View 1 (cartoon, helix red, strand yellow):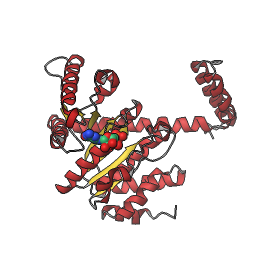
View 2 (cartoon, protein in one colour):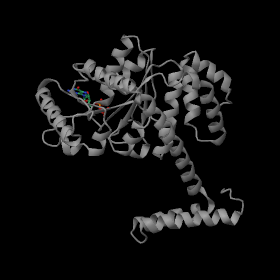
View 3 (tube, rainbow, N blue to C red):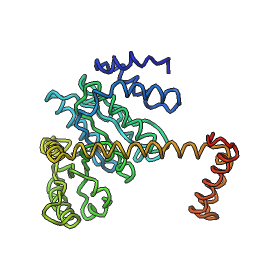
View 4 (spheres, rainbow, N blue to C red):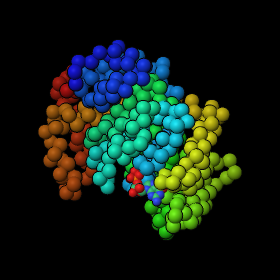
Length: 337
Ligand code: GDP
């Protein structure tokens, strides 16, 4: 990366310059310590302009229709005068089905729009690092004037948790696949969902989608009994024909209004900030431990021994922490290297 002028970058982002936004996100995605410092300065500079967007997570298994859906919905929102940004959380190790989330070619129409900004998932091995970069990118995109930020992720559990921790409303896109729709969705993911949409409710699939939506609705009533529980609405839509997309968006906005009316949007975001602080501490500590000299030396061998069942995971973890602590003590400075 060329030398970075944070003031210039911040001014360009504030002015909504695409080029500056792209460069700012590249800076945020970097893990080099000097870039992290500059990223911190940039985010502090932009802080007054962040937090205003409708932040929506969109999740679903590969093939559920996420990119078709985001492309179609995003294009509608742009036509209504919104400025839409799409970012993604998809650690490279978890890429499934060969699709790259937030890939511009998968959202061609939206990508071509001046009012939209589509950014593929940063690459990285660790969900923590990928989530950090995406979350910070979201702030830059808000500062650049995007009033709708969509965070796309693929349905594997941990990714969804990370995304639900950075958005206001979590939308689960699912499919009617006769018989297995309930087994196919992990309970934990249903619990995260604020809105559920059964996609591909068109042509021959329309009836099956409606049945699946009814079954899911019933399942949610069992999972969250009681009159006061706020169960996520289960809708049907077709990203292909556009049927039901307005209703899904209305349900997203209704969820957000519900949060605002209760004052719980602020509470949710405040809790997210607190969790985020600890997530950053966790991620940093993990890096420090992994990269300390003593752990680095034995890491591969210990990982192998745990994989082969010679050492239990519990003993492996204890061994790593002991190595790290010895390392710190040996330095005698309290500053692990
Ligand atoms: P993703 O992997 O979740 O992003 O799914 P894609 O958006 O790439 O869609 C997977 C396939 O399903 C593509 O062939 C789409 O054209 C198709 N598809 C997406 N949405 C719909 C829909 O609403 N109806 C129908 N019939 N096909 C759809």
